[in-house]
Image 1 (cartoon, rainbow, N blue to C red):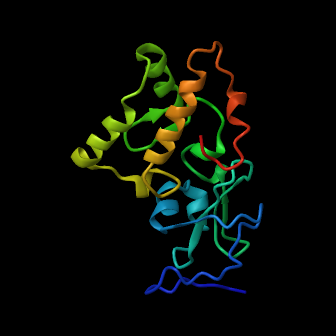
Image 2 (cartoon, rainbow, N blue to C red):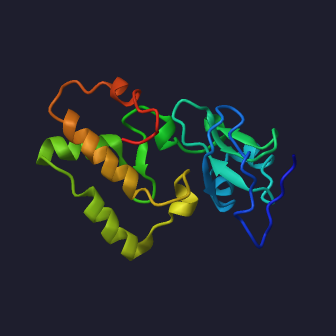
Length: 174
């Protein structure tokens, strides 16, 4: 079944609009998000008339998909690493203000805690954030940041930090 986005009603996607790689429902994302983050060759395949979803499954290579087989974009199609799809510490956790898993972990080891949520919240007011065009999820990162701070707090005292601690999260959260 072909589906074209109803410009007046972005919520008109049919229920069977699932990730073709893993079967996950995914989260709605505005066209501006993939359009801002796809690399050059992938952007040529992008059809902004389609409705897209973000696949939240960490083990799935798909990042954005529509209900058309030709409209599936993987990690390799993006200009940035995708937090929920990567296990490394250098992956961004806040795309707008440059926080990574490693920077927060380092802060926690040094100071016994993190002010990242407070700092990001202040920066969201001034100068303002641009999550819709910088975060592949197309939404605010504070939930991911808060989740990572909780996870990092549990591992901050252990050396060395092994990236495999991230591989056990099937829901993409930390």
